[in-house]
Length: 370
Image (tube, rainbow, N blue to C red; front, side):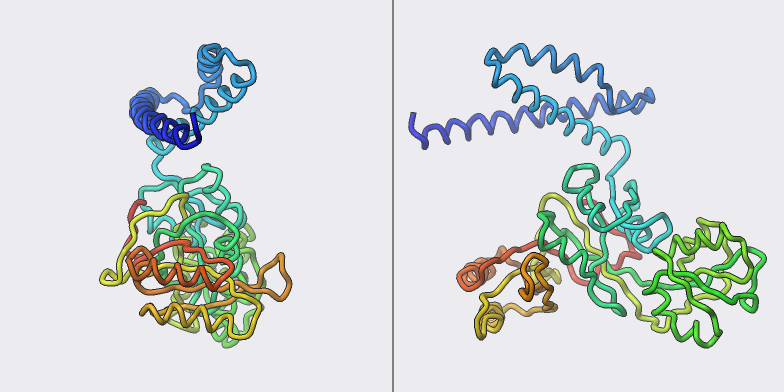
């Protein structure tokens, strides 16, 4: 058997395995329903051990058997994640604590999902990579503070796809303990960006400003301290969560303060076209030569594509080298889009489409499942 025949045979086997996978997962759905009805946990280590013992003996080759055991375990791990999804809904990762704006965005985009808190953007991102969560909702840009560099770098180094971008209007309120009044406040606690976004209000009232990890943690600290002279700058949701009183509303310097959140998942989804307000996200590097960036930009323009966004970010492993992030109107999967990408790949060392989205989707209106 030559390599072509071997590959064709593997293709036939893979086709059969795909059909068997669907049948297995449909049966797992029935098991999940039974467990949910009877209050049983998803994980049953004794049953897993029995399955491995029963089926591993079917593989006579001792060396191959160890790989088959690993294959069985991986299959059962996927089945458990599927059961979790069926029994608990979609698992949505975000960075921060409950009440933070990232949590608010995640709940509004996926109201039927289960939100899962992580202490950093990287850990939230990696939770999707490893299958612990189904999706991650992470901020990519704020209209006041600009891009979120850490998330941009995860896009560059990681392999998740963006399947939507949602706008969340950020409204900051002044929160105090129930017996506090505005005139009592002497000190405010919040995330540095929130303090900056409310700088004029803070200066006018002569408050001392103290940094916190995020706005929800600031609210939590104020609730725990119970001091009428200390307030948090955070969301109304945080007030409800931590039993605080809204002392003043909408204290932002700008009424157009908006954060864009991207939805990351392990696989690409629907690709909207230009008529639907569709756009795609593109990362690329250029040759270290005169006119390298201009050459790339001219290629994009020559094929009739308009860039909504173009930014540069430093490459951490190569000092004084940069990658570029662009958001481009239209579809990269159209005939013209494929030609443009082909030309770009001929001129750039690295070209990577990382996602698609529809323009101007508001997180306040809720989102959709992926």
